[in-house]
Image (cartoon, rainbow, N blue to C red; front, side):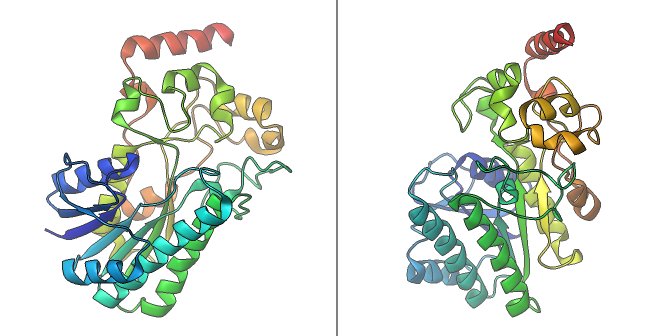
Length: 309
């Protein structure tokens, strides 16, 4: 059993990560500003912006591994300067505290938005599907904060790589178990609404991942991190797109700049590749909208797609 400290454990992604780790037999400490009282973990209320208190917390708890999910999770949720300061300060203070305490493994959450899709002045992919080697070009403070966090991983490898394993992962648009049952997603629409109206999911290039699959990724990274190149970044996404029609058809229609390379996506293939995680960690998402929505809803959506086709 490993003691794992998870920041943001009360959040949309954090709840599933904590649950997956606990069910696998890890001792989990969930650190967040507010406790839920319902997690299979010891919940600790804490403000990660207090660097001294964070150092004391990690020194006291002595986790074997740290998974950092806490962040302001939505672009423009607060003014850019506040968002960038908050996200980067929390990550750096936790990383420094982990190094001081001798933590052996640290995984930091980044975001696909580091690539810069949706930029108001235009964005075109160099190629599809998008992978971890694609150039980053953030256009808002949220994406920029995640680039900074990825660079912190590189700094950590250069500074403590002889005694600490570090990694970053870019979870796609996170969908939670309750959202499959009809609760609104992070941007306010239901999953079914996003599937019925492609324009709603086009802004994120139709990417998504079930929060439990992201939890399985964290579990796989903890088990295999010492065997993969230190500092590796991973995309973590579903094995298909959040769409009822092939992206080779939808992307050129909704994101015209993708037209020159969209044909490389065949069938239900997503725009984001998680091949690296499968190759290095043996992880592959097990859930999709076809497995998690009610069969009658899936049939209705697939029927609409066939009639429109």
